[in-house]
Length: 137
Image 1 (spheres, rainbow, N blue to C red):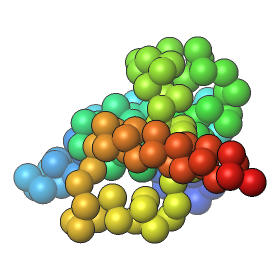
Image 2: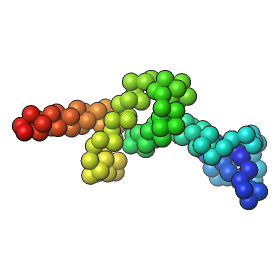
Image 3: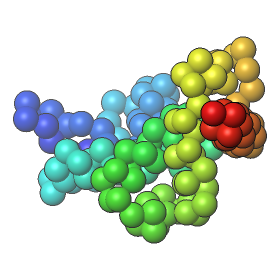
C-alpha cells in the first residue's frame, strides 16, 4: 500500500517485507494499492498496525507502537479491533514503558532475552519494589 507524497513520489505505508523480498529477487515493479485518501495520521496508524502484527517484532517496539495507536484512538477497544490483539495484551504492553531505560535496553539487546512474559515478570517486580518504597516512607 502506497500514497503519493508532496514530491510526487510514492511512500510505502504497508507491505515493507514484500517490497524488500521483491527487490531481493530482482523485481523492478510490484502491484500496489494507491491510497490518496490517507492523511499522515492514518498512514502512520496503518503502518503501525501492520508492524505490531509481526511475530518477530521486538516487544519494546510493539509497546511503543501500541502506545502511539492508543494515543490516537484513546480507546482500548478500538486498538484491539484494529490490531486484532486482546485488550489485556495491549494493556500489558503499555505498562512496559514504566521499566527503567537501562532495563529496556538490556532486554532488547543480545545481552538479554526478550519476550512479553519476561517483561511482565519484571513489571510485577517493578511494582512490588515501588510498593515497598511507598510503605517504608
